[in-house]
Length: 320
Length: 101
Image (cartoon, rainbow over all chains, first blue to last red; front, side, top):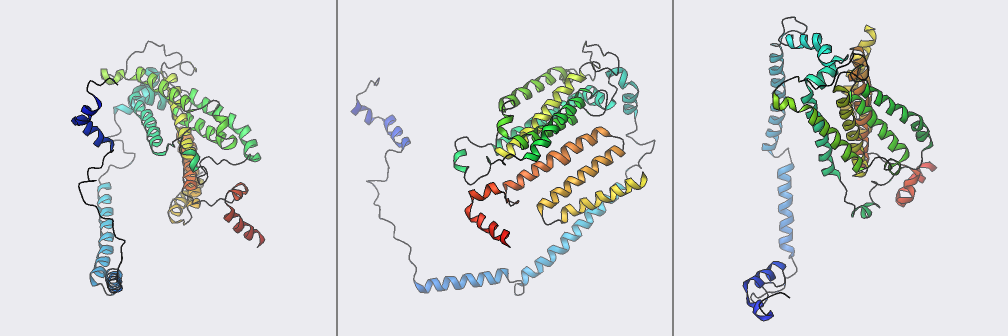
């Protein structure tokens, strides 16, 4: 012991008393307060009868609608007011809708120069044949960054809610079917054997051709995610853990979101909608064209695919 | 093509209403799945194939699978698998009785 005081002197100090109190080694009541053991609760017959009688009367008065006038009036009033409220709400909303400009009118406020500029100069500015992708990932890339971050945060929230502790897993194995997996279903496995590669290749195609044909990061990522879910259903979690674990998920999401952040947050700081990246746009229609759109599409696609699979794994197993 | 569109829209409305009025949760999820499928065809007819792909993958695929898993979690789907019979002996008796009838 490296204490300066001896053991007896140390016992007299306040620090020792506080420590003892904190650890709960001494009960302050023992020896100072007279303690009598509690008597078991007994009730004589008269009071018990009275109590049961009172409870019955109370119950009848509260729940018996025919005799309880107050409740009767309230329930009628409640119905009438709720119906009146709904109809007033409908009337107000219809009244507001009647003020909206008619659909397809050329003088509508949404028919302004922004849409015209995107359609006319979209291909020249961004180099993407698919105007939608050019808009999402070039003009409005900062919005898409927010969307992919929302997906990541949603996964984190689900992880907080549904994660299983590894220590309590064994206890629950008996009454919970979290770890229960169906035995080899031959039909599902044969179908998945042919379908999963095709689904995943189609998803990769949709992502890589995001700037040329309909689709892009979100659609392709969702397709790859559903392919992964089909794979898990057919072959089980053990097989997918050979190439996709929580660590893989973490690294993929981290790298993709960081790349997106570094590539596109300049518009947040500069307030400019378009800055030269230095990457040549190439000829529109080629796979390797349109500057940063292709790598950003791949980033978004990977984040979405991982999120979809992570949701499923967390719902099924509570972690992956 | 116009008639096809109208038929699809009628299906869509019928699906949307019957989801709310279906008593069985499993049935309502399957109806919801078909709703998404019809919606994705309508997206193609409205000339936005990228939305159609997303709707088919997310609406018909992943959302309904998550719903199924949740139903399984809250024991709304009663499993009659052969593997489960061994785990719960009192259940197996009732299943055998059902088979005998």
